[in-house]
Length: 457
Image (tube, rainbow, N blue to C red; front, side):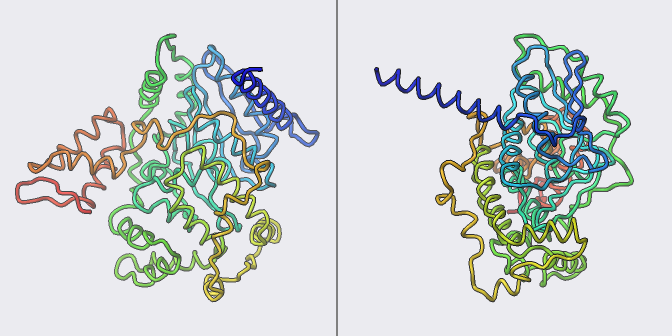
């Protein structure tokens, strides 16, 4: 048999085996809940609603086995125009569950149909994986976002290695280590969400999305642009009683303290804070000392290396890291103590100081990907990949983008207003964008004697 034929046969066999493996993973189990996911179809709109309100809509294997086949089916269907995901939550389970969850999250992150996530309520753990990689992430006044994994002796997963290091400055590192919560409009201001609307408008927005009609020759970019315009139809202004939280002196303090590559240096920086941010630094120190010491160290390294991983690498490597946490006592202790015994966990080592005394580099085993058995490595559902999110024009502006606009003025320079106008126009004047750009310009630029903005490195 010719070499090419052999390779084709092997590729077919591999794909067929992967299909059988996935079919087995998605096979309903006796313990599955019947109505934990509600799926609806209306015109071109397909909606998935997580339906475990008594469990805070926490994602589990039963739900994944219902969601993933639908997404695969709709991606191939000419009848499905827009997919909306509603609900969010937390998750805990074994490695097999994490593998299935990460496959779903990667599939969503590379989905070839318009995908809209409603972050209306608690968005943590598994709910983050269902939403954070979507081109459209809509926050409301009821949204609560956090990455609480270090509180249970785990690490921020579901693709956090990709999206947290790519947040402005070291805000992602701060959120990962402390599990600090963002509420309402601040989920948008931080860049976690792409849009903000009031929760009372969500049903009308769903109806509007279902009314959209795409032409066969419309590109994905064209369809996403139409969806963006439709979402903005329901923008009723940012809430006046909820100002931007992470800004000004606090924002500068976060960068100042969380820019370091070691936990000891971060602790020292927080202890050195004075003035208006001293109280915040004191609270942050208390928080870090309550977290699993191992989780804090692993998470910090994750934040430093994850920014170089592609989206596919992210989920494969997070799966390997999760397998190491399954073997570490802090994960079992954290889950049992906080969710069962309802008391403070007893970490091993017991504290950041105890860990420092051992002189051990606790992170090394978690990032030794070479010793992960080939048969245990995560096999994703497609080979799609990227190193930066492909639809950043729908996100809030990054500091990097604004810096590039400032520097594009060359020696002559550009005024803050000129920079503001260009960045806001790129996003069609969307609500909230001006406030984000203004905060960054006030913090990261100075104005010379000619009125031109100069970037502060």
